[in-house]
Amino acid sequence: MTDKLIIFDTTLRDGEQSPGASMTRDEKLRIARQLERLRVDVIEAGFAASSNGDFECVKAIAEIIKESTICSLARANDRDISRAAEALKPANSGRLHLFLATSALHMEKKLRMTPDQVFEQARLSVRFARNLMSDIEFSPEDGYRSDPDFLCRVIEAVINEGATTINVPDTVGYAIPELYGNFIKNLRERIPNSDKAVWSVHCHNDLGMAVANSLAGVKIGGARQVECTINGLGERAGNCSLEEVVMAVKTRKDYFGLDMGIDTRQILAASRLVSQTTGFVVQPNKAVVGANAFAHASGIHQDGVLKARDTYEIMRAEDVGWSANKIVLGKLSGRNAFKQRLQELGVAMESETDINNAFIKFKDLADRKSDIFDEDILALVSDESVTHSNEQYGFVSLSQHSETGERPQACVIFTVAGTEVKGESDGNGPVDASLKAIETHVKSGAEMVLYSVNAISGSTESQGEVTVRLQNSGRVVNGVGSDPDIVVASAKAYLSALNKLQSKADRVAAQG
Ligand code: KIV
Ligand code: ZN
Image (cartoon, rainbow, N blue to C red; front, side):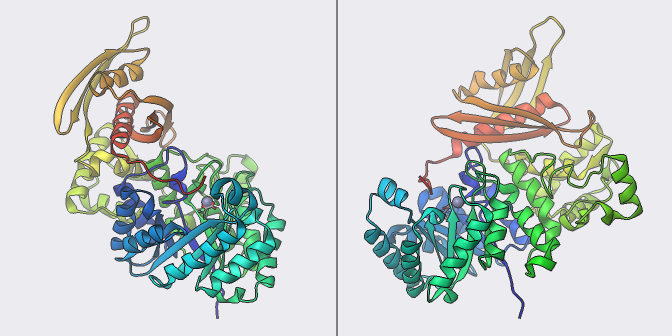
């Protein structure tokens, strides 16, 4: 019998709680498809009771994803649980994830409940959930800072009521690997029915130890499920990063001795998709998925790698999805070559119309840029205008004039609900003038809290990828746009952020 580690991805739920990382329904569906290709065991698709939008997302993901288990978070009350169960109805395999805080601090200050009330609510909520679904996960929120005696009492009771997975969150990222591993080990040893449930770890990264803590929970504590997110996305300093934890368990199989179902070759595509969707850029020195993760700059290292790659490489770049040959397509490439490259990159397009639209954009790009890299293709398909022709705002064209000593002028043509409008303005620079030109019509009143430009494939020939973060009435959204002309990329990013601002509904937060 193999000892399997279950990979539970919560990019679409805990990851999305990161300010500015909120995603549209279509974006979530694309990410869910990529997570399925990555073969994660469980996809936490959202928190169905938090808003109608979240409910619809969980339901839509449950309808289309057939290989992974689809999970919805729910507070430990009948209304939330019923709503989550309703959203999960179409799933091949569904899971309810109930949470209730158990630390003294959270019970007293946040819930204003006594430990006995929390105990009863935990027990009864699992009993209620178990009548609706057989796969039930229970999380004592802030579990790591909870009193172990009380935690043992609660966990024993919820397992008796039928909880099948027990997740022990380090909600505030306070744990230290050895201590967290032993914390879980002790719980498992003390709770008489602990063998009736799968134990799970869920670590936040406030002290930079989420991956180390999760691995200690597995190795020392005996947990067999890790909760994680692509690129470590998540509230504050984020969650345990899926790519790091998976590659650690795979690369050091000699130490962990565990199997996983993950197709690691899909890791990079997942990382890129999440980064481009949320606008959360991956730092170059990030393990596994950073641009420098497999680059050998020093002469000694390069020489060693050329003689025998394992002198300095412990993983193969191809195994996590980096392609050996970087220039992939050019001006003469046909639709079939383009479609095949999309498939190799793990990009699924919903219809032939979407492929045709993307191919037109590709041809347009190839006319302006001689070599097309994988990064260009991924940026192109993440451009919303390729797949979302029904957005409120759409980019059409831009002209601008700038000259040393003169104030730049810009004219932007864009669509508002399908009708073309023209905005003109001056500004401090061409980007400023272009965004102000858009605002002459939109008058969003939004505050820009981040503007960043990244050269997609590293040279001045490359496309610029622009991220714009806007804040309005307490909501924060990111828009991403790409183009060889960074002023155009900026206008696209701005319009994409405006689209998100006007489509977001308020929702209940999972924590706090
Ligand atoms: O960090 C946390 O405690 C959570 C729970 C809701 C599982 O995300
Ligand atoms: Zn969390």
